[in-house]
Image 1 (cartoon, one colour):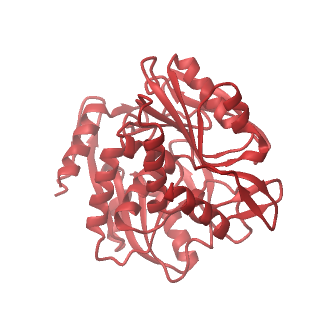
Image 2 (image 1 turned 30 degrees about the vertical axis):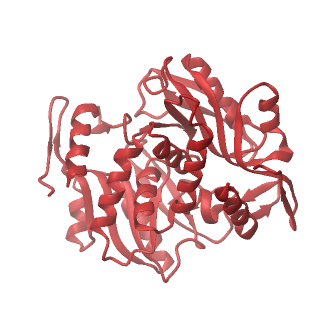
Length: 195
Length: 195
């Protein structure tokens, strides 16, 4: 749990609250990356899901890639990232879903080649943030469409007060977040007790 | 140099040549990621640049992030990734350049917050591919505009036959590519002797 304390301390020290309930953690997570902290977070995710039979990690570009990579390295499994729009580098054999982004106020397609998520896979979703849960729902859709098994989700920072994580937990989806923010204002930030 | 052989073997085994001189290596580098291979590539990059005084790694979303993260972890320095368009999560204090993508046949802005590349930094650019060199030029522009020092570039796969890498080398920029493809057709792929 040392890494959880370290992550919470970094959020308190370097996180900036912007209008629209946005938490900017660009100093260490999603514009500038602290590889050492993220590798520890990856080890923690691997530990949480060590008995889940995970064969693949699925994330979404761009800011999920680093923490997913760290978890994949620690678990010894490949990491697949969904792209946010079709690319001519992808084959026709793709699986898609749609995600509404509150940050950007638009809906975008997410796309994975069906070569990389197979029916025999047990997939762990890893992402940097969980707020309303739209990206997570899109990634679960892709795993369902692929006919694969969902192990659960591992999230670096969950905005607990936006309810997405608890909505999935209530449906029986395993959601493990390293830091859960219970409330957030310009001046203060409190965490849910999380081990 | 074991990792260079391993990378070349993976390109030969899993790379697919698509129309437009595109090499698809989605199986291990830029859609699905093999964390173990990439971590070895990061160690090799760290070894190549161990005496260069690197303080930051700069890459570009999305497919550069994993190899840049691996190099940053091995070197113990932060990794910054340029975004391909302005985001409302970024402050106004940004550094921008423009990049033309042959793959997508369009010009896009790349953006980094000036908090993360500082005049006192010595920056290593890390990316998954180098072809004509447009992305590399954009990243060099950003380092120049930030007033920082360029250590050089480390690339996973260079398409040597497209000339970008040699153009920068002729200008005195240090460019180290783990695999350099000298020629590429549907049926055959040859590498430059690269250690």
